[in-house]
Length: 130
Length: 273
Image (cartoon, rainbow over all chains, first blue to last red; front, side, top):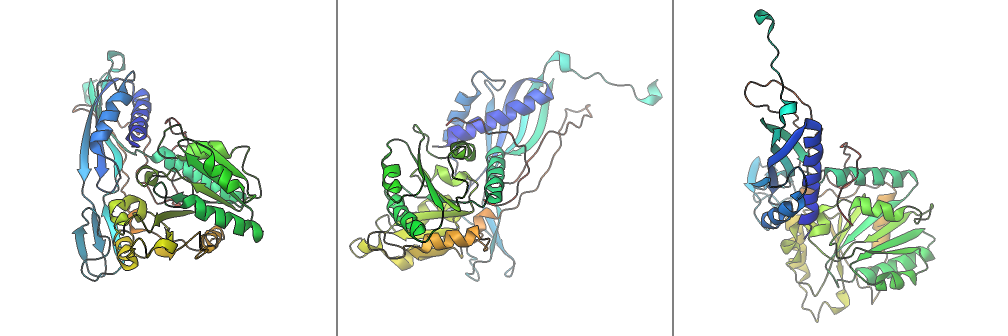
């Protein structure tokens, strides 16, 4: 159960970015989780809620996009969904020629946050308006 | 005002960066790390005891760090070899992280260490996700664990540089089907070497030390398919319509295989342990 460590890493990274970006509240975090990332989305959601407590992410929603694992065999010009358990030998030639295209993602995709009124940007007039 | 910020950061980027720095620092002083992963009770400690004794006999400066939730039993067993040994108690944490390992090495690891064996927490799930700065990642499975173990724990076996089968002295009693085991390893990690060992009988003892020394000396290490996924990097910030800002937030995409260079921020991971 390393999902708590993963959740804390997510919260830590988003907190840093939010601080740098002047956010006052993070409302949602979208994560890409590959089939082969070794992370259980339900366990991660549970841990995420706990890890957000008392941070700028408190109450933020975690959106998990699952990413299917796919591989390619260049000599056979074949691409396949590796499945679970994964088949990483080429199903056509049976050789160890596979190249993993997707499935190991454990990535923070995007984050929605609110910026405080103080951070509100004022629109600069374009030159024609001056 | 609400903003959508495209962070595109690998969640484990900090661990990967810390691991990369640790690997570089250790390499500069001539030390290579061997990360040993297996389920509890697969015979990591017994095999490691034999390998440490052999290393001492052949004059290879080795050290071992062993991680468990509780007890110093493993360290006591390994210390009988005469090699420097450190027990790390994780207080319940299921895996080691690079930052933790680095902290434990400070002031302990003898300068002249050629090989540092890290006996990870007995667990085939969580430790698989954490690069510890190792040069060689070894996954062990005993003959009693079932031939389908590699399929049940594909991430652990899929990222291994070397697979060791242990307790082959009881293979017959356990009706271990070597061909089936090898086929299952091949499915998740095509081309990885599988070696048979029995610490009790001495079969295959020395193979781990040999492979570790080869890797430490710069011999090419197996590259698992699962460790080779390339990620596209992509860094920019989407503002709400009407906004034109381009805040370039720090981005690090792509979790490479252990050994791959990473260049994310050098800050330490913020996990406990």
